Amino acid sequence: MKHFFQSLVSWWFAAMTPAHVPETTLAERENIRKRRLLSIILLVSIAVAIIYLALDFRLKNLSLAQALTFFAVISVLGGALWLNRQGYLKLASLIFFFSNGAAFVQGVHVASSADPFLLFWICFLSTAFLVMQGLFLSAWLLILLAVIEYLTIIWYLLVLNHALVIHLLSPVALQDFLFFLTIMIYDSALVSIIYSITTKKAVIQADRASELEQANAKLEEAYTTIQRQALTDGLTGLPNHRAVMDQLQKEMDRARRYNRPFSVLFFDGDRFKKVNDTYGHAVGDTVLYQIGAYAGSELRGGDTLGRFGGEEFVVLLPEAAAHEAAVIAERIRAAVAARPVPTTEVEGGVAMTVSIGLATYPSDGTSEEELLAQADAAMYVAKRLGRNQVRTAEEARHMSTDVELVALLHHEGQRDAAEREGITPEQVCETYTLRAICSLTNLLERRDVGLSAHAHAVSDLATAIASAMRLDPREVSRIGMAALLHDIGKIAMPDALLQQSAPLSSQERVLLHEHAEVGAQILEASPFLCDLIPMVRHHHERWDGSGYPEHLRGKDIPLEARIIAVAEAYDAMQREHPYHTGFSLERTLAELRQGAGTQFDPEVVHVLLALLAKQPETIASMKVVR
Image 1 (cartoon, one colour):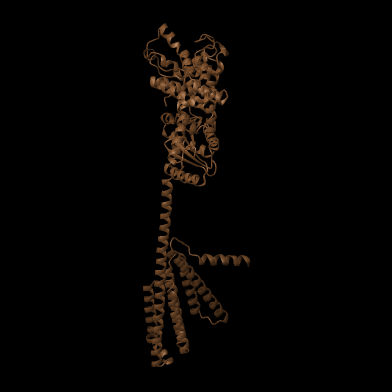
Image 2 (image 1 turned 180 degrees about the vertical axis):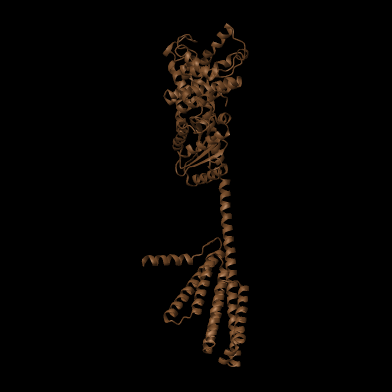
């Protein structure tokens, strides 16, 4: 029994629910509602017909003709139910109406031999069915049905069964009956038409309102998307130049209003042009995206990272004083340097570093433009000093400070005053070291672009070797500075000697060998570069003691000079010169292995070979002019 009722309920909902349910508009949802309502009416009508048939059968008042009529009605209603489920609402409604009309005719036929009141009641019910059709049919169909119903009743009463009707009703009563019946039929039709038209208009208006609402929602979504795209960099997904400037103005306004510190970081990828030239722009795009991702992972919750343009990025650090910003900047630098960018084109990934400039409000600037300019200048200093480091705007300013600040090192009164202003003698020393190095490298570049490119490449490689040997960070930095200046003595050499393509004579060779000593003498003129002198003077000494200028041997040669010697030899063999073409990488490595233990420190050569095995493309790219 339980299974039977479950099946019955399942069948009920299956019959009640239309087979096709499009619900994109309100009109279609209204159509679904009407179909469900008609399904219920049809199911109730079928159930009533079955109950009536069962009662007549039980009372044995059912003739064969009546039984066939009941089965026909049930079949017709079932067909209308199926058509309604398939989406044919109007057709199912018409079938339902005409089946009711047939029942009405049979009722009138029975009533015509009974009493006038029953006849009137049956006619009234027929008009009620007409009102019901206003739920399902359009206005023109309702008018047509009203006319058909009226003509059918007139034909049945006045033509087909006129004798029986006259027997029940007098001519005056029949006339009144037909008059009221006409009013009822057409009033019912009018009510149905008004309901149908007003419902249709209401649905259409609601649909239009819904469409306008949806269009407005789409317009707002499109506006939001366009606005987001206008403020977002398409490659990295970070805020673009415009968005960064807008946010910078907001943060500066907040810092001014509440008198709070605010810092800006400005950084870009070192040697990025080489990445594009070597691997293509697709790899370059991947590198930019990943640099942004690495940097973003090191920021705090309220910080803003944006792509300022090209390979340049800006970080806005609210509530961050200079020392706090320096910690974040160092985290970013270390994160990028520690993780090569994975790409399918380069095995092992592309090793990248960034140079970062830092400026803080209000000490480094009180306007947006000034703060950005100071951070940019600090980044430029970081690049000039070997890249892969963080420099502050204060350091950049010190490099352009007047020479009179040197007196701070010798006059205690002035030194105390300077310390009260926040400038210590140690800062002055570092400032003038950086300034002297930049001045000398500028001089070298003006003398010979090739020498400058060679110096930067040797500095990069020597720094990489020193870092791999786990030397102290400050010592690594000093080695990079010394490597930048290892050939500074050549500015005293004649142009004809430096640019000569023919083999050197013995006298010319002796003159060229003097450049190491001359370079040391140049550095002696600066009190800030004294510790670099041994590195420059002895970078041409050989492990077996046959080098110059002092023929030092083995570990008597300063370690820093041994590192620079290997880096200088590697780049010199790889680089094109007027007097010989550059060696291949294989030949260069063979020469280094052969020279280990005679010309070069074997340990330093081993470290360089290990670096080349680990990151060959990165090391090889250091010889390229940037």
